[in-house]
Amino acid sequence: MERYSKVEIEDSKSERRLRLRSLNNNLSSDDQEPFMGIKVRRNASRHRDYKGDYLDVHSYPFLIKLLNKQGDKHVLFADKVLKFTGSGKIKRCILMITDFAMYIVDTEVGALKRRIAIAAVEKFCLSEFSDNFFALIIPTEYDLLMASTRKTEIVTILSEAIKNTSDFELEVVFSNR
Image 1 (cartoon, helix red, strand yellow):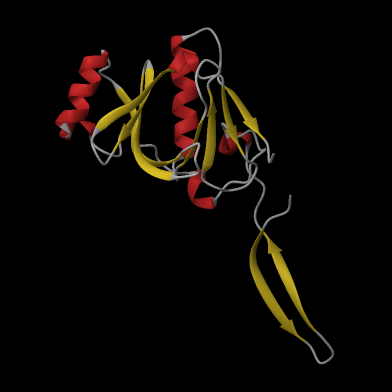
Image 2 (tube, rainbow, N blue to C red):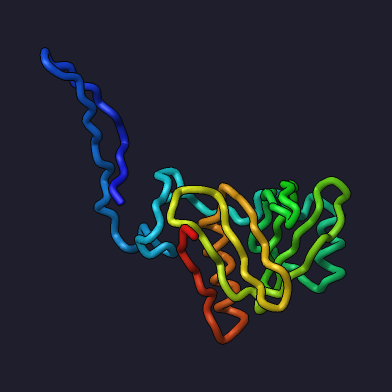
C-alpha cells in the first residue's frame, strides 16, 4: 500500500493536476517491530520512547491498594484508554498491565471492573490501518475492543509479559475484517 506525504498542485496552461509525493518507506525491520512491516505506521509512533506508567500509579492510593489486594506490585503499563462495550457505548477507563495480569479500572468510581490473567490472552488483533483500535481475544472470557494512542507500546509490553511468564508467545493478528 503506497502512502503519500504531501499533495502538490501543478498548474500548466492546459491542465491542472495533483502530484503525490511518496513517503520514505526504506525502513529497517527493526523500525517495524512488533508490526513486521505489515501495518501502516504513523511517523510519530516509529521512534517514540516508551514510558510505561503514564498515570504515575504510585500517586493514586486506590490503585496501589487494588494492586496489593491482587498480589501485583510491578506496573509495566498504565494509561487511560477507551473501551467499547457490547451495547456500543464508549467508556473511558484505566488499563494497567502488570507481570501477571491486566486490569480495567472504571475512572468514574475508581473501582476494578475486570482482571484478566496475562496467560488468558490468546490474540492481539489490529487493523492494517494507522488507527488506534485493537482487540484482545480471550477464549475463556469475553473479548475486549479498545482504543489507545499508545497501542504500539501496549502490544509490545503485553507480548513481552506473556513471553516472560509462560511458554507461548502472544499471537498478533493484522486484519481489516
